[in-house]
Image (tube, rainbow over the protein chains, first blue to last red):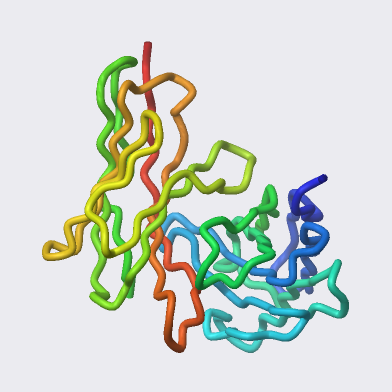
Length: 116
Length: 115
């Protein structure tokens, strides 16, 4: 299995531009998570999906952030417009078990976003 | 506000010695705790976990201790090896309730094991 795939691995953009991060979960996993890692706050959950439906989006920082999962094998996290404070590493993770019972969430390699 | 806190951003240990990574939490409702390990340019990977009904869980060189009264857990690595050099994240969750199993992570501790 290829694991969780994220693209791009690095993104540099200018303030005000739209940014789209992409994720392909492990095949058969029906839970998908988006996290953001910063020095100040560590790893924060932004949103998670079950069977393509958003379950918990309480971590989405503001309306500039949106996430979609149009099918079981693809999800996007969009930031529009981007701001320098959005600079962080964004991780996607998936699991095939209910997160209440599962130990493991399988993380992708992350996308390092820099907003100038 | 951080519900899971790792107050030491870094730890340096000599190979063969014990590494002790600490974690504190504020939410007494957390009932399951996990440690993840992260190498540069990779995503975090699950390492070890412990339920709130236990006070110790061991897996090879890795042992996690839980002190519920102090809301504190620690990860012990014995003996430490250079390959253990990584960022270690502490995480906690509620298995039941409205948070539906979401993980709350700390900021991480960078462990460096030197020869």
